[in-house]
Image (cartoon, rainbow, N blue to C red; front, side, top):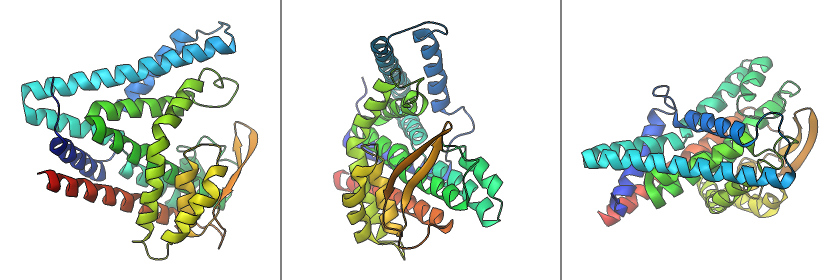
Length: 326
C-alpha cells in the first residue's frame, strides 16, 4: 500500500488547486461527479423501487445504505486507481492524485457559474440571468427580480466556498484523493437526495445529516478564511464579516451554510436571505447581515473575489507548509 508523506500530500494539494484555477471542471474525460450521480440514481432505484411502499423508518434505513455504499465505493475506487498509478510509477500516482483532487474542488467552476448570472444582469437581460441562476439553485427563478437573481448567485458562491473548496481540500490534506472523493460523494448525495420535501424527507435524511457532520469543521474554518480574505479586498470589512458570523450564522436552517453566507454578507455590507420559492412553496429564510445599502449585481463580483482570495490564502498556506517540511 502506498502512503504519501506530509510533504507529498502538500505538494499534490497545491498542484490540485493550480489545476482547478487553470482548467476548472473538466469537459473530458467525464467529470467523476457525473459518474457518482449516475451511481446514486442506480442505487436509489434498487433501494426504493417504483410503486413499492415503505415506512418512514424503512426509508431512513435504506437511505443510510445509499449513503454508506456510495461513499465507500467512491473511496475504494479512488484508492485503487491512485494505488495502481503509484505502483506503475510514483509520478503517475502524484499526477492522478492531483487531478482527482482538482475535480473535487470548483473555484473556477463557481466563478464561471456566477459570471453567467452577472453578465446578463449587467446587460439588462433578466430572463437570461434567471435561466443561468436556475442552473445553480433549486429555488424557482422565474419569479425572481434582479436583486433576488443576484442574491441567488451570491449565496451560492458563499455557501459553496465550503462545499466546493475548503471541505474537499481539508479532506485531501487528511487522506489525499480517496478521502477528498469520499467527501465529494457525500456532498453529491446531499445535493441529490438531501431535500426536506415529501419525496426525500426520510430517504435523504442520512445523506443530509452526514453532509452536515462532514462540513461542520470546514464551515467554521471557512468563516475565518473569508474574514481574513476580506482584509485584502478594498471596500470590504473583515471586522464586520466576523461580527456578522457571530450575530447571524445560527439563524440559518443549516448548521453550516449560515457561516460563509453571514461572512460574505457582513464583509460586503448587504443582507442575504429572505423570500425564496421552492417547488411552488414560499420559504422565508433567515436574513443575514446588515443592509447598509441595497444588494446590487456588482456584489456577485465581490463574492467571487472573496472565494478566490480564500483559495489563494489556502494555496499559500499549503506551499509554506511544504517549504517547512521540505
